[in-house]
Amino acid sequence: MKFERFRSIVEFNKANMNKVTDSIRDFYSSVGIDSDGTILNIPQIVRQEAGKRRFIILEMPLKDKEIGAMLYRSDFWGYIFVNSSLSRGNVNFAMCHEFYHILYGTNIVKQTIELYIGQEYVEDTHEKVANLFSGMMLMPEESFRERYKQFRADSDNNSDLDTICKLMNYFKAPYMAVLIRCYELDLMDASGESLKKLLNNTSETVEATFDRNWLDKDIIRSTSRNDYERLKELVNDFAKKAIEDEILSKGNVERILKNMDKISGEFMEQGSVK
View 1 (tube, rainbow, N blue to C red):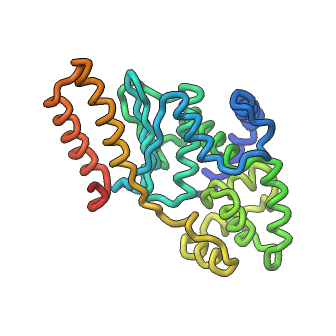
View 2 (cartoon, rainbow, N blue to C red; view 1 turned 90 degrees about the horizontal axis):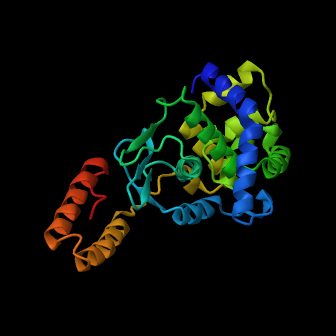
View 3 (tube, rainbow, N blue to C red; view 1 turned 135 degrees about the vertical axis):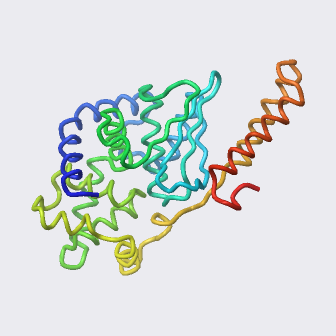
């Protein structure tokens, strides 16, 4: 990410943090959560609450690594297809990002697939707020500040990179989201040279830092989880009832499943559709 774009994102986040904090508190209240300190697994909560709102979250290894997620809503159900070709941290971030759109109905067009691609929505206010919401959900402020202080003190020579990687591992969040969170909370040196160095770190450098600190590298690796067969099971369950109620014929169902296989083959990595 370029230096000026990063600074612009941080400035936007600081200006909108109070509003998003209120939104998150309202959500916590609606699901009976007293404070963010009581949440141990944000993605699990997001999946559960999305389901209550008739949205199913599915992970699939998409060919295009620039796509974080695809969002689709029909008359009955909505679907979030998260790209499991990306790292677990990126999957978690994309999941929370899309959940914001479910909660507040932004950028959801009925029967239209929305692609959230890295550079495309940088000037879209809804997308920037969704990113801010996602970062704040994955990395609650009080806990983040405490862990930052602890990990920085425990890092060699107060290393910024060591601290960021430990935060990534702890909060199961991607590198850039952690870096943005550090700067929007004014935890790191705001000097340009320090930030530019952090922005220029490669994935190989991050992985080496994980190794040096004995951190779990699963968070920076692709899971390639594929929920496609589970999706077909859901369609089959719906189809059985639809056939019984004479809404669909058996031939209709066979064509739907065949089209699903065709579309999935176009979007997903080779060998991922069984």
